[in-house]
Length: 296
Image (tube, rainbow, N blue to C red):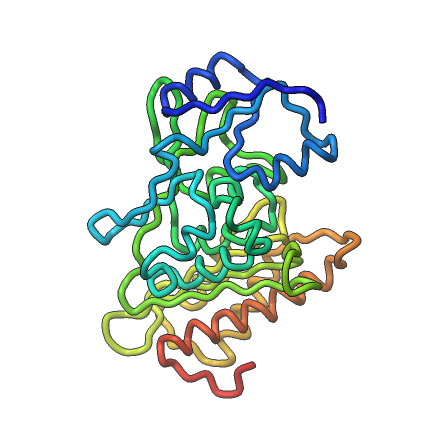
């Protein structure tokens, strides 16, 4: 590695001052599972490292009157996964977070880092998109909140400028009569990157089995994680069945713009999108006690 200066601010104002003063020379370190690997491979050589693990606001993990979950950008993923009622209330996000790396990696890695690394294949991103999470971003001039989809700009690129810091993610508690599922395909069961990731989320009307709202998000098949409004619209106002889910899965695959690389061809990724969308929707339906005849 190239030599660098290391700072470990103990407060948010101190960290923001450092970011202001260092301009483009600094990189923020939370868990470091991505950044350190990039530095060792000489793909990132920052002159300054700002370690934010000691900042209280970035270590927040709590409910807000049982309506919003606040996850600080420096909270380890293992702590999030083990948070009381997290699996029951945020099932598909729990599924995505549980697939990130190994137990050791999850003990260091953070959801904030997973988002700010801006990998199209980030396992937390599709679920966060479906849950309509928001990001609290700070700079010396103040703070602002943006939808999570506004963070992503391209592979390895976010909308955050050099003097901004992701403080926390704010995730609304799932609506009543709702269920979601995140599925991915990888060549290996663990310690691998998603070839395709799909999250599907359904909200039923107050009575009956009519779908009031649907949200579908994809990872690893476009320059950024994406929502698929055209496919979501097919489900709205209808009772899910096998043919409808098949049509939604096909429409979702049409929205994908995957590349071919050493891990998979574009054609295979697009087919995986269709298969995983169908399975994720069927899983969500099963949770909501909607039987899909002839499902996978």
